Image 1 (cartoon, rainbow, N blue to C red):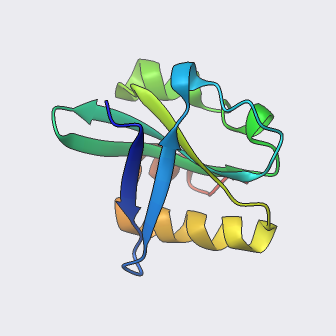
Image 2: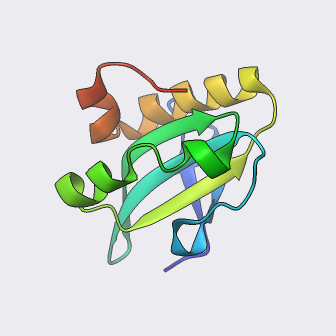
Length: 109
């Protein structure tokens, strides 16, 4: 397992996410997060989200991601400014097409 992963947004920008060991972000700071399934060298993004508090928000759909889509890891990236979180979330969803974002029909913030 990599402690960091790089994800490419629809814009082509690369975002570096850090692994939340044991799924624990331990920070009330805002940021973006992704649930991924790591299969060998491949990283499949299952859900992308953003929250003004990663401690609370990063767990919002974790159980569903694990049980229905095989999520294995949670990665996060600190982003204090709400506008930056929203831009990054839209870019990641556009570039990675996470299945849970598609089935939700809307982005969650």
